[in-house]
Amino acid sequence: MSNAAAPAPSRIQRLKTWISRETTGGVLLIGAAFLALLWANSPWRESYQTLSDTVIGPAMIGPIDVHLDLALTAWAADGLLAIFFFVVGVELKHEFVAGSLRNPKEAGVPMIAAVGGMVIPAAIYVGALFLFGDTGALHGWAIPTATDIAFAVGVLAIFGRGLPAAIRTFLLTLAVVDDLLAIVVIAIFYTSEIHWLSLLGTLVCVGLFWWHVRSRKPRWFILLPLAVVAWVLMHASGVHATIAGVLLGFTVPAIAMHGEAKSRTAQYEQRIKPLSSGFALPVFAFFAAGVSLVDGEGPGAVIGQPVVAAIAAGLVLGKLLGVLGTTALVTRITPLRLPDGIGVRDLLPVGFLAGIGFTVSLLISELSFDGSEHTDGAKIAILGASVLAAVLGGMSLRWDARRARTADMNLDGRADVISEYIGDAKDRESH
Image 1 (cartoon, rainbow, N blue to C red):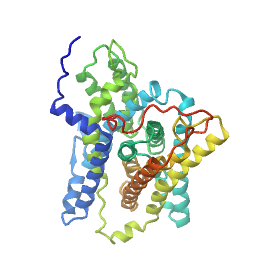
Image 2 (image 1 turned 180 degrees about the vertical axis):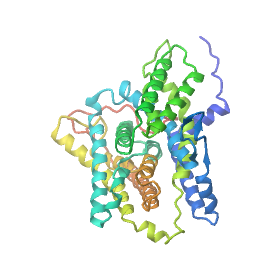
Image 3 (image 1 turned 120 degrees about the horizontal axis):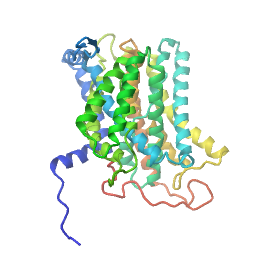
Image 4 (image 1 turned 180 degrees about the horizontal axis):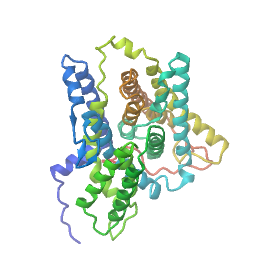
């Protein structure tokens, strides 16, 4: 047996590992959003707006009208987020085939909690707008239903050390189902007109991608052009272009094949996630979060909009009530139980973390209002509520970690078997 030490990772490998960490992703998101807010409210705010409105890309490719002459903000929302949604699609495929969603009985509680965590915030949002008499913003009902996986799991990785790792799995399952439902919502409710020929072309490209990604040696110079053409055609179809990323991610096999040691979902996530976490998401946050509070009637006019209170209440209060209430109801009236090591009290921080909307909420706000009078208020509400939810989640995690735990936290009549705790491994925060 050889005793030779494994070669030390290169600087690029170490950088990729660092960027892929859940804590790093959350910091980069917050940093980019904070920089955008500072710039958009500085004496140089006109340069930020000029940069955001800069149009690049072709309107025509030969005789074909492709409508790719987009502002940088649109490229960030439609283009860069497709990379993020590809990673989401790969993660969803892995979870359904080989992960936490492969056994519906075990995943039942967090899956149902995810549904409750979307219905209640939407109901609170709609109720608040009717209460305040601002029914013109009802189209944004889906804004407080989203959960940002990267941000939420990053907070859990920092403040949840010492708690059972099953809490992380519960949060991941909830957030993954939340993302899946958010994708369905975007595809159904935020698509005004469908060009069926372009959509058919997208599906053909996705089918070719599916065929090649399962071959013995898939080549990037074949997969990348197929992905780009699928995105262009999806953009032309009228369905939001990020859906192409999800469909492509779903085609990646989640079971190891052709003698490989790891599944291709694991390989592709490892390769693409640094680009998603380190570039695509921060750049999107930078262009999406730049809300000016000093122009117009001032910050009071923006913060005082009914849509601000509706979104904030939906994210912070609605998510908490939806997750906790649904879980308590399901575990009381059905045979479904929480996983070993998790009690209902552990879902208090999970409920707060689910209220970190950020990325997907910002995307839905742009689709809902598209530069209307509600846009700035919606973004401020998302940023403020997400930060508040993160703070409350972090505080409740530390409170939960300090409390004594019983032998049967999930109350299923059997002693809990806990094999792993958050923070046990040195690289626990790597995803």
